[in-house]
Length: 410
Ligand SMILES: *Cc1c(COP(=O)(O)O)cnc(C)c1O
Image 1 (cartoon, rainbow, N blue to C red):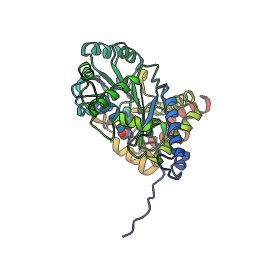
Image 2 (image 1 turned 120 degrees about the vertical axis):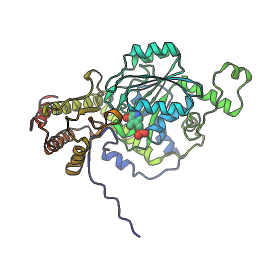
Image 3 (image 1 turned 90 degrees about the horizontal axis):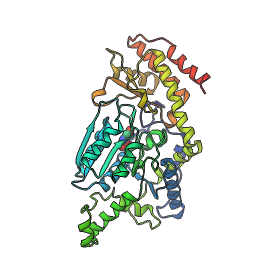
Image 4 (image 1 turned 30 degrees about the vertical axis):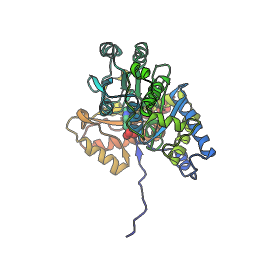
């Protein structure tokens, strides 16, 4: 039996990930393989660490990718920090808050959850008051909720965490490289980023960073695991459990990423090349320029959506600039419109999860996908597909409004 070669259609991907990848990244992925302890390779590892620090705006020593999707970054951090019985406070404002909860629970956390309506974010005071009541070891929260298109302000919560000696862990998967993430200024102890969103690298590794407050826990847990903690240390510490995962054990991973290069896994060579090129492109553009570009195309997209006569979902005050949520007009089959966009135009937009499924579409403007021709094409495809579904739109007005931004706006 013979199998045919993959013949992937060329798509315009306007989802919250995975997004299109710059051809430079695809080329970098075909770079020849190097051995993992070859100095030519370890020097690439060091360069990637340095670029990850820049993107996270941190002076942390520890900044490296975890091999696996972004979830592996989340699980490596949460699983290496949380011990059975630890109190973990998670404010949930969308689907990915539930993911943090699910991971924390599997690692034995005593969960304390806050909920708010999907489409809203938390008043920092609400989180801070709950934190004072619960006195958790960790507050874990999502920065950009791709499921609802909302972005949670973090600085006040971070400051309060530091004052109370609570660890602040942030899922910045959907914002890193597309919106401001100030790890150090916002008192974030550990942050997890994603590749296939605004960094525009294929899914397959997850850049993370953490500070010495997190490192201290890792080292203590390692001592317990090796049975070298003294009785005095054991009595003083609240942590008595070795880290459960081998693959996602941050204490071992940091030894591998340290100059000692203690063998752990085999680094995913081609993925590291991809991340290296993705980060290089990102830093060439510059963080400020990149955030401004995402805001600008967001503006053009919104002008088009509203010009067409559609409504946005969620409050503009806390809108995530990299994901725009659109209300599905009454009586319209959301999935059928999406299918028509994909099959007829080769444009992919996303649906949503849970209570929002069928109620909103989510349009991503992330990284390499966040470009003028993509925005205009997605608007055109959406308009045409809506007309085919019997929706009365302001014919032509959406693309014109967006074009106005592009021709006058910059
Ligand atoms: C996409 C996403 C994730 C999960 O990423 P995977 O790479 O699919 O594991 C986690 N958190 C947020 C906020 C995301 O948008």
